[in-house]
Length: 287
Image (cartoon, rainbow, N blue to C red; front, side, top):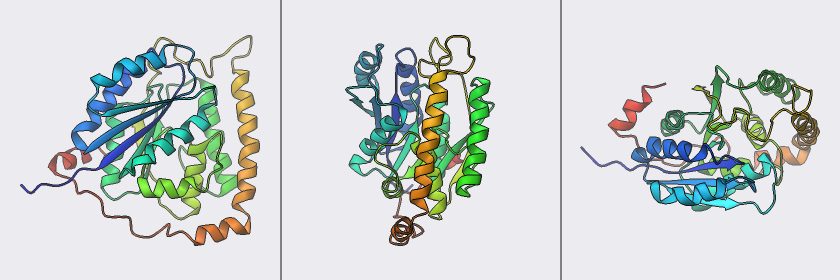
């Protein structure tokens, strides 16, 4: 059988206070992806965690076959800026593909492999659609509202536009990120919108969703407090993100944005990519 090359892959992973679950999650990702790639980099941006996340990651590195890279924010910057940094660091070595997943471990490593297989099957951008959500009711309501807002405000139809499990051709992601604000609160939402407005097909695939790994189902970011069932921190975040997205919408409607759009070969043929071998083809049947 002729030798075929495998892709270089980086995974962008923002994390905050995930000491009790991130180790097992990264091992699962490592096992799922390493057999199918030439090189694997797991790029974790620790958003100034106050628990033992950093020490867990330091001990974990030697146990992985892929390369673990940890960037620690000096202060807590929030999920959006941490994700943007993770994307930029993931692109540093010009990988063939960049996958993204949050560090709370609410997905399975096998679904990351499925995203990779779809990218190798000529998709340029793939986004998960969470099935059987294992989140509090207010998170699911928010996802429905976001879907309607994106459809109404940006004329973009997506089933789960802010899903934190996705993958991109490396060159395409680098180009898309140039259209996003340098610092933003909801990068994945904007990537979905920009890709659609640029005419780049986004392949959506159903993925399993599970409770957060670790002892606390909600984590420390959106944990409820006081008498309200909805965390006020989440309410404040949502209001700020709505305002930011309104500014982003105005930016996209400006003539300059249209000129920038026309100056990029968004719909050109993608660069040659590694072909799949029979092992990849077998995993492709999971779709």
